[in-house]
Image 1 (cartoon, rainbow, N blue to C red):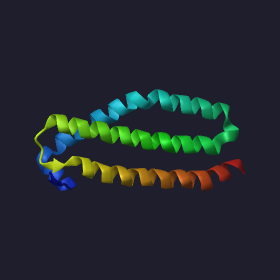
Image 2: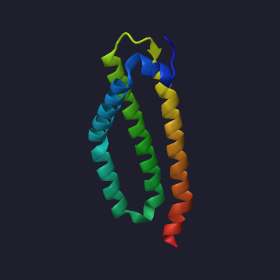
Image 3: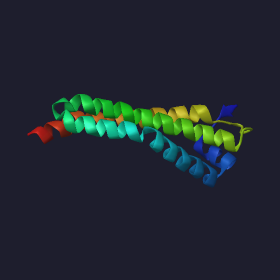
Image 4: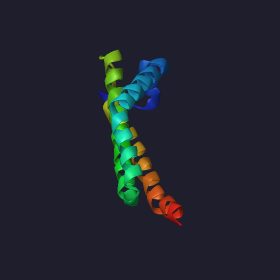
Length: 120
């Protein structure tokens, strides 16, 4: 398989199939991880004094959520066209790395800037 860009992926699958696969992945990942997020919200309301550790748990849960979305998205696209010539896995790995790094940076900003502002 050759390396693939988003433009090549769009020509192979089409925008409708890519968007349909993303919405399905978002739905199934949300259904799968909804209980985890509810549990985290309940734990945060009970243990407010451990807020920094809870924020770290939320960051890890969001990275897991992004991982599950990308995995379901990948499986959905592969099931739509099993004979695709693009290497979707490396494209999604790069995208997941970018999304995860953005989530880590936003989480650290929240952890070191916004939480101290809330406690003042």
